[in-house]
Length: 382
Image (cartoon, rainbow, N blue to C red; front, side, top):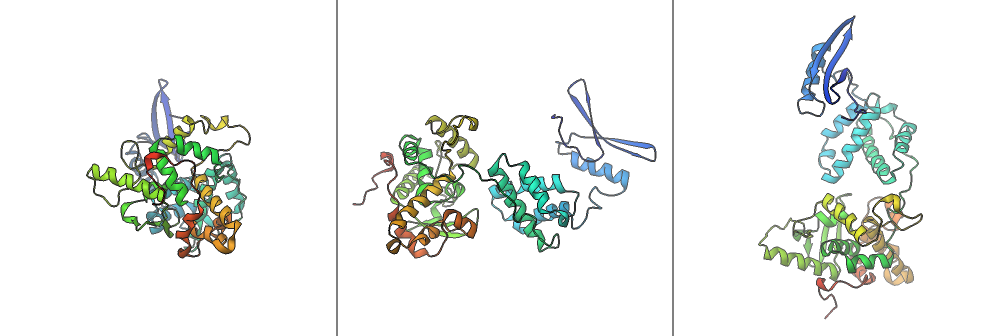
């Protein structure tokens, strides 16, 4: 076991023979020692054993004296809330990491005692990983926002925190790099890439929410996983051709499931986010689009990210409408395609939703990207 394992109050760890570990609940009161054996903290039996020992020694459960407005109680109640229960699986995983962090750093304090200076210190401790730091801050802010109207604190201490920009996270792809990926990449990866860059949607939405029952008449009716925003997404002929390929493979395999994700891996199975992430990184390294490790990037070099495909789409449309905004509808067209709720994010991309009626014509503004692989089929108009 790692030496830096954080043990709960009154838990003692002993090691014998260089590798065997033993754990005890130990309390000394009025000069008298009470010691009770405990299972390993990672075991399923540990929690019940610890609670029983605490009850036996102190006559109460470990959290019986926890403040009803403390951070620990805020974390506990948020995990029981409908807001938490309705989070998508990926979002819930990130929220859990943030809740654990709040409990670890501030669990013994009142929620109202947490100030921006404390949040900034926590954020700064993660700032060597900007994207992670920003995600944790967003989740912690959501938790405090949820707790503010429930009596935990009068203000959200996450406001006005100085963030570290995540270099490369939103950088659009250079044309040559994107062409290399599309023309030389493995088909199962290229299909996801093309679906993302031609729809401007996030990776999780493309992998998990592009389904038979959400596609009708050349339009993808998407409820975005991150924001819950309902966005009608007109599908480019290249994406429609990819969907035809996947549907044909599904018919051949006699699979009837309208809610099964359409995009599949090399084994014909729907992608999992982690499985795609591993394959994505491996493919970029194989194509020499990135080095094997982040430390090997040259200073100032382009760092390809999947989210950058979304920014690539927005950049192409923005460049097109900028040439003639009177005809193409100006930046509102870009905003409409991305469908963000947040004005901050709309400004980040220079885009946010204003009208469904402009979306279909937007497809005409996106130029053909590289040479579309022949296996996708003929995408030229008859």
